[in-house]
Image (tube, rainbow, N blue to C red; front, side, top):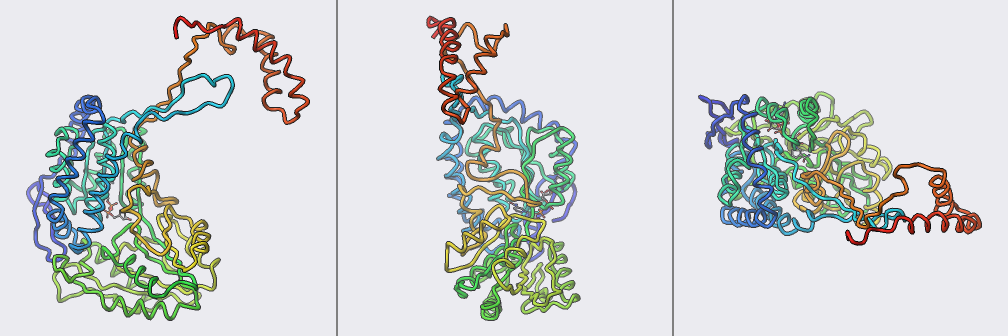
Length: 528
Ligand code: NAD
């Protein structure tokens, strides 16, 4: 990316050639944009869910019709191979639209809250879902379509307006997203794009919107939370990870090595939920490592537009420099680099070879930082307990995987892992299962995306309670009296005593006080 005369120029990371450009947004314009969205919001909310569903269905059709074109744009802007962009990103995005419009009525209809207390049994009691207003969506470049849509689609369905800031490295995909929704019928001021880097993101998170949905690094997420706090703006943060894979001694080495190869190196390792640390039972460690080395040697590195490419370039020069630094540090600390570990100087783009680093000595400690690139750290472990302990020894808690032929054992390990998601015998792909829901624990996030919980984040949950009996007097209203206290005293024993004799003894007092109360305070039936 570079900035030229007030425009953000997007660069192809495989060739470093420009792909296109968009106009930069002046951060000082943000309050005005929020006002624009806020005044368009009531009409959008009042348009009704059926109208909004029709628009999202149309957007789904438009995405389908342009699926290959959009996948190509993703490849051109951030480098991931076309086949990968087409399947894991575009197909999963279309599925996300389908999932949300299909379930929107079920998720957004009033939710009954049955009341158990005898005092309130007759009440009408439910949660009503109200649109929030204007929400901001600040996103990264690594899944430039699926991540924004994971916010935009449920936000629009719930009746919100969206201020969307795509990553400065993928502004063209960001523009394409807006174009699709506007063509589908979303009003211009209901989905507003803001282009720029940190300045624009800072302005968006401090702009007084009702909620900020941020996906990006943990460090920036913390800054967003602080910026939003000044106005007590709510936040959902989907942040970094340093995901472990635990390979048990009964794992099928072929399956585990192929799955972890893909989990670590697809999208050139630039996934928040990429496998980064691999803990392998000592009994199968050598076999596993030798298969992984062989398989990583077969990966074809190149321009993502070439159909034979498995691994594209890193998305930015900064990413390549960071990965270089991590490999240098590993070398300097005496760890073995079993495969990869270098850039491709004969190629123009930000290429880096898939890298396997072993940490076999007692002193070899895998750094607790997010790699976010094509590096897998491999470490042998004695037993399940050691694997779980090392897997959990991280500030992050995004996703994890367990590899085993015994699903019950896999689930036992999964329950002990401190992460928002655990996959058994697969990795990464649950992010494309919309109903699964997505969240990080520890320093990996706050709140949910995807699934029903993702839609819950888009609304105010308003509790409504109505008394349909129109009593003239309620027991807890004025005036207070000794009679009222006696009634509650008897009621407490009758309802909560663990002693059946005491409960039986309280019955006469309960009947006396409560019958009297019900008789004296008959409902005003004429009002029913
Ligand atoms: P980043 O944190 O550098 O930037 C993310 C977005 O925030 C960009 O749009 C950027 O312009 C904006 N931004 C930068 N500074 C800001 C500020 N001070 N205030 C507000 N916005 C600001 O992340 P990135 O390099 O674009 O993406 C990679 C990171 O995203 C990785 O850490 C990865 O783990 C994380 N990520 C997390 C998830 C998840 O679901 N948990 C998914 C994808 C990526």
